[in-house]
Image (cartoon, rainbow, N blue to C red):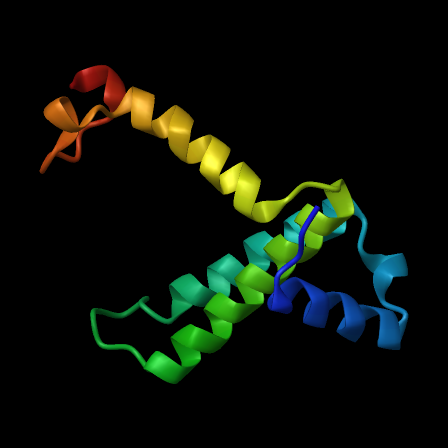
Amino acid sequence: MASTKAQDAVRAFVREREWGQFHSEDNLSRSIAIEAGELLECFQWGPDFDPARVQGELADVLTYCLLLADRLGVDPDQIVLDKLEVTRRKYPVEKARGRSEKYDAL
């Protein structure tokens, strides 16, 4: 499985601090949800937001996603591409272009 610069950097960061012992699948899943909530909080009171804060929170979400993918032994790029293919079949362009309905309502 090939890794990205970000994955390699995250692995090194965790290894240097010996934090892998805390990175069970359930702990990482909870951390993703917590960080996603913090990202959502950036938009809580309207459309105005601090771009730097949004980037920081988004980086936290992505970091925990990379850690969970690593823990599960899956390639993040590949699982995204696989899911995109499934979604492509559920939302064919000719039915879904410009529409926001769920696939079963198209």
